[in-house]
Amino acid sequence: MAEEAKRAEALHDAELIRTLKARDLEVRSHEAAHRAVGGALTGPATFTFESGPDGRAYAVGGEVSIDTSPEATPDKTAQKMERVIAAALAPAEPSAQDLAVAAQARQALTQARQEAAEVSAEERVESRPGGFMAERAVQAYQAAAQDSVSVSASVTQAA
Image (cartoon, rainbow, N blue to C red):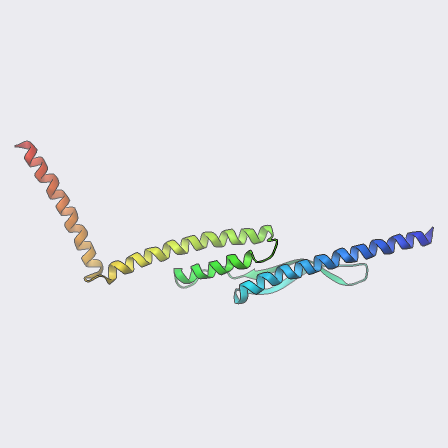
C-alpha cells in the first residue's frame, strides 16, 4: 500500500512539474513579447515564482514596465503611444492589464493626434503671408462686412 501511495505521489509530482514548466514557458514568452516590441520603452521583466516538488523555482506570473509618459511634441507622443499599444498587445494572449494599458495608450494617442492637428492648423495660419495677424484682420473684415449687410438690409426694409 505504501508503495502505491509513493507511486501516486510521484505521478502527481510529475504532472505538477509539467504544468509548472508549461506555465513558466508561457509567462517568460509573454513578457519577452512585450520587451521585444516595446524595446527601450520597457523595463526588465520581473517574475513571481512558485517552487515545484523538485525544488526548482518556476515563473507563474510576470510583469514588464513600460514608459507611457508624454513626449515633447504631440507627434512624438503619438508615435510613442502607437509603440506602447503594440507592446501591450504583443503577447499571443494579452492579459486584462495588457488590454488596460493599450486602452489608456489609445486615449493618449487620440489626444496627441488632436493636439497635433491643432498645432498644424495654427502653423498653417501663422505661415501665411502676414501670419496670425493677417488671419485676424480677414476675420474682422468678414465680421464687419456681415454687420454691414445686416444694417443695409434693415435700412432697406424701413424705407
